[in-house]
Length: 243
Image (cartoon, one colour):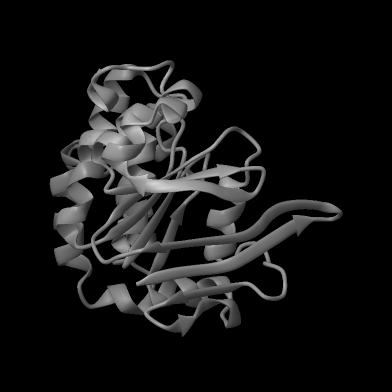
């Protein structure tokens, strides 16, 4: 489905990504783990065409070359990014934010049906449709951001640190919702600081260090890997990710 091959990117003389390869299958949830500055956000932005990748890079969705497309056409192709910091329109209502997500041509015909699907995943939003987004809690704003992205009817959803700054209760609600997104037939590439919760809902994962993929495997295998536990899960746990 989504194929990323030999993707490199730089900011001036600083190389942020070096020959990254990964793939995401239909309906998969894939988590990207790495320290701050490893290049995770840069990779998502390259896929979404918000920043350029270097010559020799290849990003394709079902064989369609995304690197020849502008960012808005990547959305039409079926890629949606929820950036770190959410990027919602605070002075607009929840309903207006969600409606903006359906602006893509691919989403207009099925807007009403998709809205009901989004509200089934985020029932809190159904109660807040007329509320200004800027008056909501951080967790509720994140629901709006993800819901808006889903309104474009993406084939692949890119999520950049969705639980950052949220309370434990809101984090739990968010991850329960993320686990339901696969029921929409949407594939997910998740960058997330909460490695333990991410691995619980993911099928597979990649490890990114200094702009390079240094490991990959099933979520269960990564959760039980002592090196992954030490680096990302707060120590070795005898029961892996459920500990």
